[in-house]
Length: 164
Image 1 (cartoon, rainbow, N blue to C red):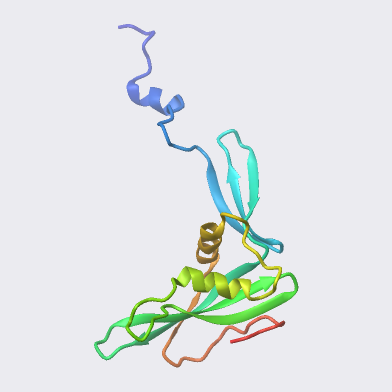
Image 2 (image 1 turned 120 degrees about the horizontal axis):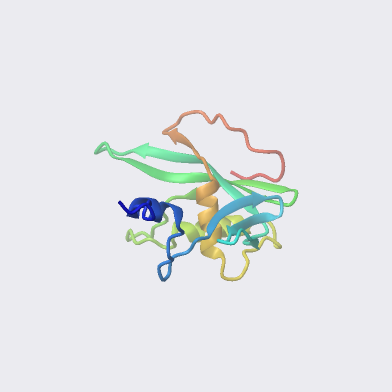
């Protein structure tokens, strides 16, 4: 037997780094909610951490409203969103769907969510080209409470400027 050949193909692939495929990325990224706003934190393959500011505010979906229809289907009617900018806090409701009298959707939920967030203060802003990231950060970092029909609310909004 040849003792020089001790590794088989499985141990070789487990011990040697895999070659990169075109378009594949070895970096990881995550969203963070900070006092100054949302940030995108990326870690490169070499271990370098980069932070990209996304907005000057933070927001989270704190409640989700459901209703049952005559045919028994349950539908999401809207969301309660808590928006924070510096010392200001605003709690507002955003409809899940906004339609015209003919039933056509007027604006997307993402657009209405961002409009609600930007209404907290004139200096609240989304960094150029980062709109989709901000919407994703809000959705990913939120853990809404589900409210069916007329159940009582158990979460109390934070003190500050509020609207519901």
